Length: 470
Image (tube, rainbow, N blue to C red; front, side, top):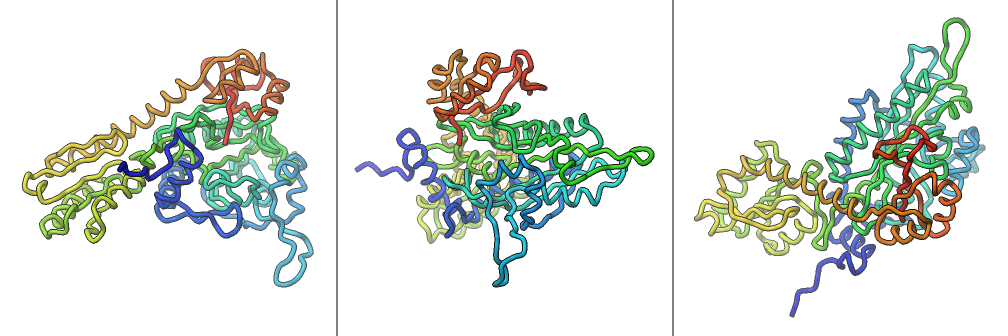
């Protein structure tokens, strides 16, 4: 009798495959309140590695980490009309505390532009205080009607950056820097996802922004996922909160601002970009565990060898785990590590010990081969880099193969059934965008004719990427 698959095949039911993988790879569980999630240690390890890589890039861009309260006076949100209107349906509002009704309701932060601007207005006095570059790692709450673990949850984890600048040009340049040098570099070179960097249309723009830059990834089923955004806020929040700096003399000028963020949604994007019917495939540069060394049998010599190999790999800078739990069947352990997507498995048994070899199993490239045990520390780093490059290449090839040029709304809808459509923005326009939305298709972003990020919505030659999205 054929062995039943561990996961629902992607081609059979992609959403079910996604949920199966999250459960069986022990990434997360649903929380007790609808729309919340419990992130399990292996899943949180992925997020921690994302944090580490992102945090280093954010600090290199000059921002410093801080922390602001999760409770925001409701009156703060009403100061910027477009902002509060955009978030009103998602707000969680606290009206009672300590057994008493609060004098003013407080909102559980959906994002922190308002409370951070309250303090920016105190901290910024002169041009010498600018630019002010702040980031925080935090949780936020947006009451989600159609939750899906990692992709859309009522509470999620993220980083949110907020900056104040003396000029429009400086703010715009900084938003672009975050978009490309921080987010673009991380998603391409660490996550191994060939994201498209583009500009949101006015319809899709962040509430309260004058421009939103986005990074869009194509998932394994051809749908789009917004992986991160960087916003130019102009002077909208500065005027609402009177955030000004002194020019020469007594004259004061409103600051120009940005905000930008990525979240645990990236874990969902990782799963749907690289996962297959056998489970997750984690890019080696991201993986908290790049190599697992498994003892096939519990013999003392085998256990000693796997520990020796683990120590050698660790000394070579490889993130490694030694699995010597021989009270658990080897087959079960191998399947579990395959589900979790660890890039390389090194398996050692009595026969390998006699031959002076170890079996090297590649999760990303596939296949297995015996390798001289004493050469592993030298060859493994190169193999990990090969596999990193393969994931990025596969991501790019999928996006290119499933993106087609279209000329009409009907053709765009048809393209979005299996992938993305590219259509001239001059031909589509806001009216066409609204018609697409009626059929569940959105303009993910605008790109210039040469594939770069356009400077304006109406730039000549702009192309709209349209898709169904998570």
